[in-house]
Length: 208
Ligand SMILES: CC(C)(COP(=O)(O)OP(=O)(O)OC[C@H]1O[C@@H](n2cnc3c(N)ncnc32)[C@H](O)[C@@H]1OP(=O)(O)O)[C@@H](O)C(=O)NCCC(=O)NCCS
Image (spheres, rainbow, N blue to C red):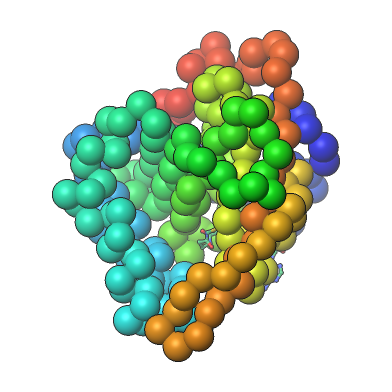
């Protein structure tokens, strides 16, 4: 999949999709700060603790997601936070942010997909699909020409998901662990300008 508007990447899925009426996708607000902080920290530790070390994961998780650090970013123009609720429960979130990318990212107006996390029991149910679609729409809305991200090179599930969405590897580096180093990949996908995506009619957020 090359550059494209924000259409679904997956067809013929064999996993049962969640009934969409029980899911709500919306921009985060200040009222979400406490549970977004809790969910964000917990999901980071769950994702990486086993393989990269719980002490390391616990420290990294808190950097940026402790409630006092998170609050100002929830309303900051350089950030956009998407939350997903299943009934009343927070089951996923994503963050887009305007950051300076590494030199391997070719873009005039880049935007970073800084975080994308789902409750593990809901993996493979189409939630990430919808989140990615909404992130791409928001990126286009913000006039970005490239969506980029950094991912742990051993996070095969996430990398498979990103590839399906047309992101390709353009570089890599290392990050410090408590014992040694881990490898990161940088991935990017071009975003076409052009006609506003149909979901703009609904502003791209607050979809039930
Ligand atoms: C990354 C994430 C958002 C993707 O959501 P998801 O619902 O799991 O995504 P999907 O099931 O639609 O897609 C996952 C893909 O990985 C594949 N996959 C699963 N396990 C895999 C593995 N061990 N190795 C390689 N591919 C794997 C699946 O088959 C699927 O690909 P396919 O649709 O082409 O078959 C979700 O897994 C998540 O929240 N993970 C934990 C947090 C995380 O790692 N975030 C990314 C940080 S950069």
